[in-house]
Amino acid sequence: MSAAEQAADDGPADARVRMDRMYRHQRHIYDLTRKFYLLGRDRIIAGLEVLPGDLVCEVGCGTARNLVALARRHGDARFFGLDASAAMLETAGKSLARAGLSERIRLSHGLAEELDAARDFGLDCPFDTVIFAYSISMIPTWREAIAQGIANLRPGRSLVVVDFWDQRGLPRWFGKSLRAWLALFDVHPRFDLVEHFRTLPGGRTEVAPILRGYAVSLRFRKDEAA
Image 1 (cartoon, one colour):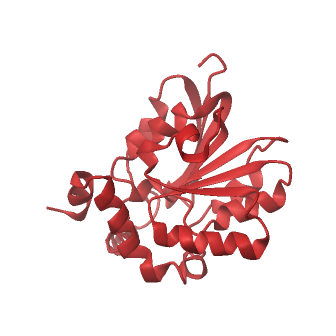
Image 2: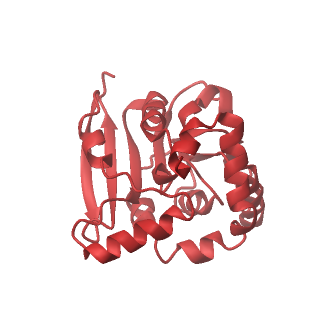
């Protein structure tokens, strides 16, 4: 059984344990090493639509690097982070304390496909923006995670994704080598990610390839009447 198949068979407890095992040590150097190949994250942060009073949630927030950057740009919004790894959230909590943002960014331990704004964060309304930044490729039940993100999204607002894609415009050897290397970390690009988004009901999708398919960013804007 492959790692992906095993992950799909894991229950919630197993998924959390697997993430903790993977990031127990990596979390200490995660931001330093990932900045060289998780392309497009800063572009998403810079271009994100955040209005005064908005509630913004990142699913798979990891060390909270993106949430800290967003909170510094948008002082009148509130931010939330969900992650399956308690170890990552421990590091995230320390990062928030150092940045003086513990009051404005709330963290919760849970699975993407079980996101619930009320249960996880005590909110009585949906999020205005939901972000998946290089987390879809690590979530075995990624379609369910996207559906849950949309279910917790306010009508008229956006779910945003940036992640690895099919590397179609790059040399074949590069894409093959990249995917083999990513698989060592249980990261699996979703080749049908764009197609899936284009068939989602109740909204419209904008697609922007990054570096000839190395990665892709997508924005699903939920219909006002949804």
